Length: 326
Image 1 (cartoon, helix red, strand yellow):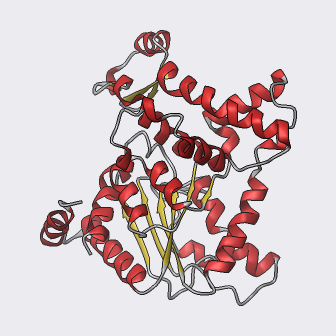
Image 2 (cartoon, rainbow, N blue to C red):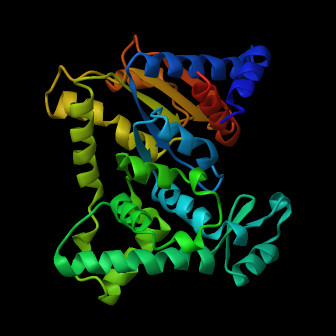
């Protein structure tokens, strides 16, 4: 990260107002929080892995600037898709101009489009399916059960995919997470491509016990264990990219502990930042202002709160560079 100091200097000189100033405030708050002994949970929605956030996120993990991750199943698997099939991805810079016929032509080429980037089905999705199916069926035969991210950790640690690597391994955040054994929580994993594939193999009878992959409720219980043990020694912050289940699931662990478990002395989240391009609207969680979270007993009135209303593919790497330079 030799460029991080230059990026930080540029940001401090130019980013003085509006969303750019909010970015600086959030980054300074992040640095102060972590330097003071705080631990940070990253909540990651959207398609940030396909946007190659691993280029900066992996280093954040290696340097202990992120201590746990809640993410969608898509982000979990798509970092590994990029790791093994990067050279086969197709970028569509004029994606706004595509007709339905253009989209169907991409389908015929087995290219799954995510905005301006197409994920190649055979080289990415099916390549990982073969590797993960071996892990699922092996666990199923022995009666073992693991979380979705643990199955992927097992594959990465085994080295069975190394001959497919098409990017520098240091740019894969999942590899960095596996090396650290980072706690990961994946709510709604069933909604991912791997979740769909798992369901198909259960219905085909390849997997006898559908519970071989552990569930979202068990993820909440694991998150509870992590939060209660970690917060005994360190305050815990919440850095949120996007909205939806990746953010709402983990942040709810605090009111669940305080209200449902009646553990009223459990500390609230001690830092909060959200990067979002969702506008505040009727019933929108993604666009809700942080103050609303005070009413749900997620944040305190003293919790440092930041919102950067912009594109996370632009903002997150800048904040990460700022933090890494500090």
